[in-house]
Length: 239
Image 1 (cartoon, rainbow, N blue to C red):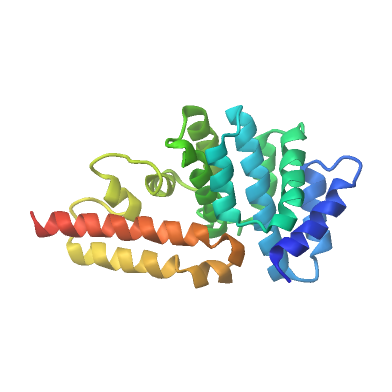
Image 2: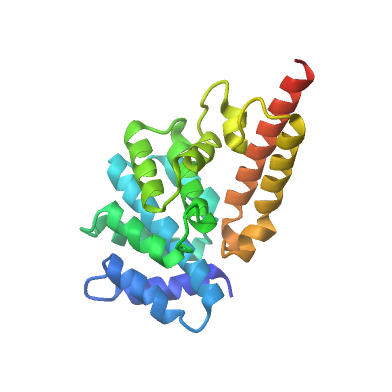
C-alpha cells in the first residue's frame, strides 16, 4: 500500500477530531502507527513536510503557483489523495500554534535526538526546495528556515552547507556545499565528495525513513553535490 493511502486514512481520522492541533496530530501518528515503526517514520516525515510547508506559506503571507508546483515535485501526490493533503495543509495553517511549536513537536516525532539529524535535514532540504521555487529565498523565508534549523539542532556550518545547495553564496559556494574548507588537498575534497554521494544515495535515504514518494529530495541533493565537486575539480585543473 502506498504511503499516500495510509496517510489519507490518517488525515481523515485526524481531520474529524474536535481540535486537531499539532499535539493531536503528533499523538495520532504515534498511536495509529505504533505497531509499525518503519511506517510511523515515513508517515511522520510526510506529516512534518506538509505541516511545516503550510506554516512557511503562512509566514510568507502568500502561496504562489511556483511554490505549489515545487510542493508537488517533492510530494508527487496521486490525484485521488490531493484533497487529503490539502486538508492537512489547511489544518496546519489554521492551527493557532506557531511554527516553532510545530517544529519542536516534529523534531521529537522524526528526529534521532542528536544534532544534525539526517532525517530532519531531509525535511529542511524539502522546505528550501519549496522556498526557492519562485526564484529566490525571501528574507522572511530565510528567517523561518534558519529558526527551523536551530530547533532541529542543525549547527550553523551544517545549515550553511544545506543552504548552499539551494542559494548561490558566491565564490566559496562549491566548497560550502561539500562542507570542506577551501585550500584542502584535492584528495581530501574527493574523499569528502564520495562520502556525501554515498550518504545521500536514494537507497540510504529510504532506509532511514524517507518515503519512496519523496525521492526528489535525494536526487536534487546529489545533483547539487555533483555540480559543486565538478566546479572545484575544473577550478583546480585550470589553476
